[in-house]
Image (cartoon, rainbow, N blue to C red; front, side, top):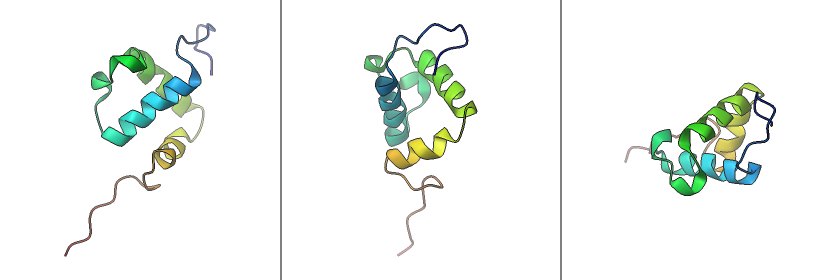
Length: 77
């Protein structure tokens, strides 16, 4: 998906998805995104654009191996 300015993003779609999956797996805040994924605010803005374009969050959560509704509490023993 192109940015609002119409210029292609510097980060490939694959790298962007990897960055979002990393955040989904680790639970880290956006600002703690490792440098290898690019600037955290660029990834965040792109995620917001993708999220506004459709049901991305559920797809990314499923791809990260999480349950569709988000984290589930552990059963009591």
